[in-house]
Image 1 (tube, rainbow, N blue to C red):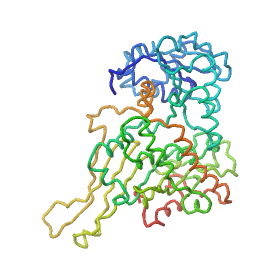
Image 2: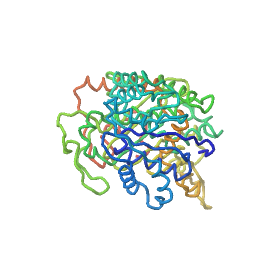
Image 3: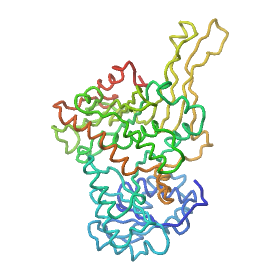
Image 4: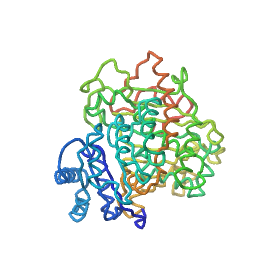
Amino acid sequence: MNKSSLKACDVVIFGGGGDLAMRKLLPALYHLDMDGLLAPTTRIIGASRRDISDEEYQIKVRSALDEFVPSSINDEETWSRFKERLNYVSVDAQESSDFARFNDKGVGDSDRDVVFYLATSPDLFGSICSSLATHGLNQERMRVVLEKPLGRDLISSRAINTEVMQNFSEPQVFRIDHYLGKETVQNLLAIRFGNTLFEPLWDSAHIDNIQITVSETVGVEGRWGYYDKAGALRDMVQNHLIQLLCLVAMEPPSRMDSDSVRDEKIKVLKALRPISGANAYNKTVRGQYAKGVVNGKSVQGYFDEDGSVPESRTETFVALRADIDNWRWAGVPFYLRTGKRLGQRYSEIVIQYKAVPHSIFSDESNRQLQRNQLIIRLQPEEKISLTVMNKVPGASEGMNLQPVDLNLSLTEAFNNKRSPEAYERLLLDVMRNDATLFMRYDEVEAAWKWVDGIMEAWRQTSERPKEYASGSWGPAASMALPIKDGRNWHDY
């Protein structure tokens, strides 16, 4: 992050008193301030319906920082500086006249850039953008950030985007996916395109399969009504997992700029083989969690949650096989998996290389010979490991081999320097008007088209999601998904 490129701006957070703002956005801005990455006159303006003063808002923010920022870095010097940036505007997002209060606060005055972060329900995106335009707050130097979910399907997503883009042009719209702000996700680009070692081996001639897993131990956490309208396919696959797939599978961009990167990602999305009709039965598995034990604690099932409806067919788990129909990836399966109440919380990408074409070692060593794996772990810790075969030290007869992991821990490699949270990088990119790690309109549409085919296939069947015990790794059928192809999930 280059401090020389700092430019003052106003960051306006709609939903400024909500959970996302207090848990993620304001701590991220605080860290940027602590690291000297906010210009001295940058302002942060919370906006919501509640009628409170600047001082009351500052107290609320301080309470959130005390809870969500480790005490070791929550220092009074940074807080004193950060506090002076904090302002508040009482605005009802559905009352256009309220938006005049931004003009009263001087938002948009002079040549300052303005970032409007819409941490609200997507149903309000259109009316907020319309009201901003009515009050002259949609000039070229002003940008809007849209939080997911962007709709429930292609039709609703297109409606939201159309409303927004009636008032803001595409270069002004930043559709955020916080997974793309993670250090290891960006390191995926560095590994592929900054080294001669991997890119020549990044194709169907050398890679057997690729696995992407986002596993959660939590359930719906009291949000049954919301979650049941979404489900794992919409909530996780349509954005997080598909974005990771695009970064793994895309061709090298001509340069590292927003349009070049996103042009290559859209090619991957358009090459995804549709999953529809009877094909969905063989290529997808969906499940719902039941009672079980997670991290030694007994937990309730999906239908034991408050507000649950026993007739629901909403999936809390999805596993699927995706295929990319192009020259680079022909014949290489991409296995995607995500779910709630699973046995462990982690997110990772596994590149499974093919076996050596012929082993020169003894039968004993052959039985121990494992394929190379490149594992990119996104959470809870961020690290990269490469599994290679190595001779066991010693002078015994023959060549005894065993797999050894070459590990890169980002924390250790960079002298335990704090790894920035995803929202820190993404907020800074918005302030700098860099859209490389954000989704373009055609990306969102292409992803929804592919996911819509799966959802329609599920609607046409009478089969319910398969039950799985909390604390397990999903339905047994998900374990069988790669087995049908003669493969396994890498952790089995």
